Length: 117
Image 1 (cartoon, rainbow, N blue to C red):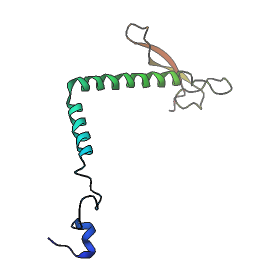
Image 2 (image 1 turned 90 degrees about the horizontal axis):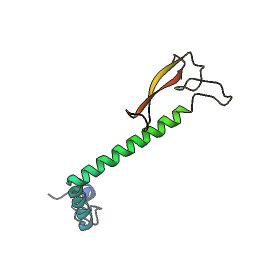
Image 3 (image 1 turned 30 degrees about the vertical axis):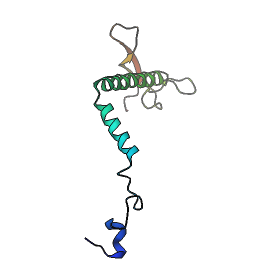
Image 4 (image 1 turned 90 degrees about the vertical axis):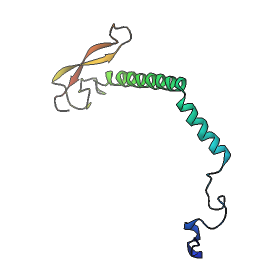
């Protein structure tokens, strides 16, 4: 089907793929795409990727727990709510913290809580 000359850009009849910006037949891109499809389908790669993601998840969770553990005092040294960091606590709540030395991998810690967060 022939297009109006003013509409050639949108119809794609105006010449080769390279001129119109399409790179669908680029051999390097095709090879890279096929390589990653084969790699992602490989069970060994899937297992390694799963293990890496799990390790990163627990490392991130441990960093977050360490950071939050020290947030229960303000700049003046007064105890504040560990969740909002602004109001004084009215009670302490029990939470689990990651600990490699504990038999279950977690220990219970008491966190100051203002009761409003």
